[in-house]
Image (cartoon, rainbow, N blue to C red; front, side, top):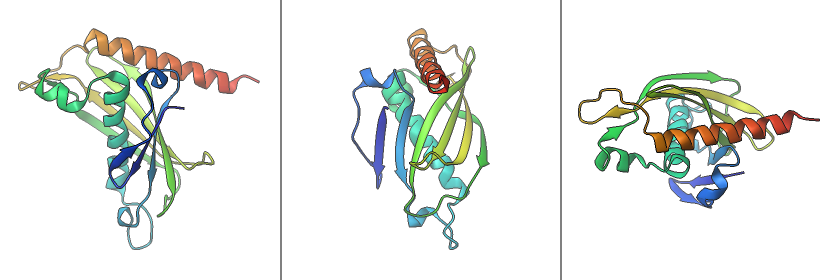
Length: 170
């Protein structure tokens, strides 16, 4: 499985891009004490931070479009226009959270992504649904997803669907 580990903000264990298209993209993130309230339960905004971390890494590693390059060199962006969070269990400090990212929908200029946070045993703690829109900069008007990005996103979605279907077969 393609995976990146985040330890205190630095990235380690990057996999070559050729491996990323055949499996769901994942990031492992350890819940830190500072991510939690005094009761030891993760703050809601930190879950969105986790989702944005994997989203940014996915654009860089799978789509081939780092956000900085999109903004500064290509005069476009992909802002999140809607975010939904479903909490399924309460992540606590020192939990290794494996985040995975899947494409739910791909429109002309929009993309809907699902991020799920699980422990290593597979227990789901949250799901984030993020809808983003490709826009021109500086006008911030919707634009069609560039064909090279669309092709990579469609290939990734197809690979994730195939991996999921393989898991479901007896």
